Length: 153
Image (cartoon, rainbow, N blue to C red):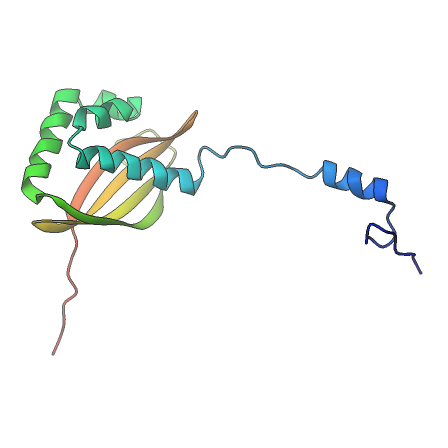
């Protein structure tokens, strides 16, 4: 039978226990984590709330900037802002993984989806994100109506 040491570890000397702990893997910054994806997407849609489509475009990934000219993006965002009215509230809904989407370079992307309550509409807002060197980069934004459930009598 092994003898218990003061360290509380059976069959191990205290120096051995310190060596085991010292060699445990450490998690460093995780720029492409799901938490960072939701945070990035939330920040980006808040730029829209603050009527800053220029800032949205500047913070977007180079991929989106090549596909959508800045002036076109600003017009698009201003139009949808007028159509939906003021933001009443927004909640995070889901994150989905998208592999090799049509029209974009092959790879894994994330869609962060919000349910946004505006004065004139309840909408799904989808922010598409691509992995970048320092974290997630927005590469797309799509809004669509939330379909109401049909109730049968």
